[in-house]
Length: 218
Ligand SMILES: N[C@@H](CCC(=O)N[C@@H](CS)C(=O)NCC(=O)O)C(=O)O
Image 1 (tube, rainbow, N blue to C red):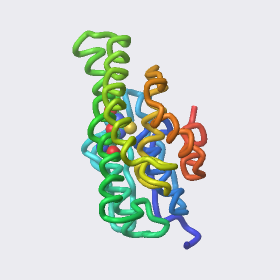
Image 2 (image 1 turned 90 degrees about the vertical axis):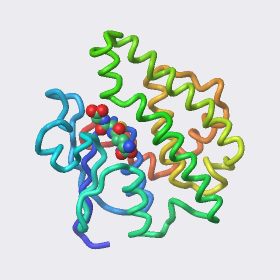
Image 3 (image 1 turned 30 degrees about the vertical axis):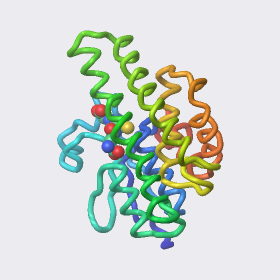
């Protein structure tokens, strides 16, 4: 590894999607510079014209690479995997890797987008459901997704979300469980999710990427 970090990550400490990418960078031993993007202050720095020019979705994470900008955590993880294959975030056979991607997508497409900040703001303000209504919706979305995820993990989990090796699946699961806690979703009904979360949370990469350990943490 060269002395100067080759990556700059636009990140918000509390963002579960940024946590995924921070963990992937740490897992692969890649140094990077954090560029904080405050999602709340001043109406949200992700919505400034300067940031939208970089990521028209107005979201973090966003990775600046020597090749150019990459947004979307799944795309970023796969880019990092191709650039730095070892240690792999998608270990195992073609089928195992498909299982990893299945868990990733349950979180990435099936749960997180429905409890994203702008969605909850729309429910709270535009649909006049108030903060409590938005929180209740987020909790409902997570609970619904976790019911499915619990069943999926019943078929895939070993020590980690898929088998006995850590993978991208764990990097998506742990931050989503943190979201569940934030929105008051009890894990009692999801013993496999809770067990995998406990195990995977011990991974150094996920610990280093934890929201509380970020330079922009409040
Ligand atoms: N599918 C995208 C989702 C990114 C995303 O939803 N980011 C959230 C934080 S976790 C965000 O920036 N939200 C800002 C907003 O909703 O205004 C990814 O995986 O990177």
